[in-house]
Amino acid sequence: MTIAKNTICLWYDKDAETAARFHADTFPDSAVTAVHRAPSDFPSGKAGDVLTVEFTVAGIPCFGLNGGSAFKHSEAFSFQIATDDQEETDRYWNAIVGNGGQESACGWCKDKWDISWQITPRVLTEAMAAGGDVAKRAFDAMMTMKKIDVAKITAARRG
Image (cartoon, rainbow, N blue to C red):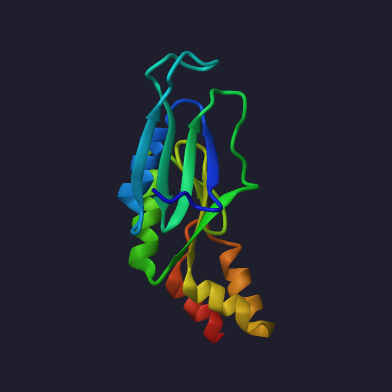
């Protein structure tokens, strides 16, 4: 077993395994690789409860910890998922929002565990990288959106 040099640790109240399995089912190159149970009672659980979960999300190693309700997630951390087209954008957005999550602005949403996600079509990233008027038009269009509309960003790029 090889342990990654750097792993994202996500603190959950009690649903680390459920969240990890949802993410593994939703995104390619994702999997739950290990579930570890507590060897004895701990502040937010009992011996035998799921304590930690090792998983990957789109190739990124993650470690879910069922640590109780002491700490909450915020938008200061998010996963950014690059999408190739509207179909892929819709699929991820709908999976997250449709499973108890909530929409936010400019391509951001939260899953039901309060993890923030940016579902970002590559056309938007490319427009922003172009700079100048192209970036301004794409940015102004994005500012009116919740889920990113690829056709509207493409039209904004063209002017």
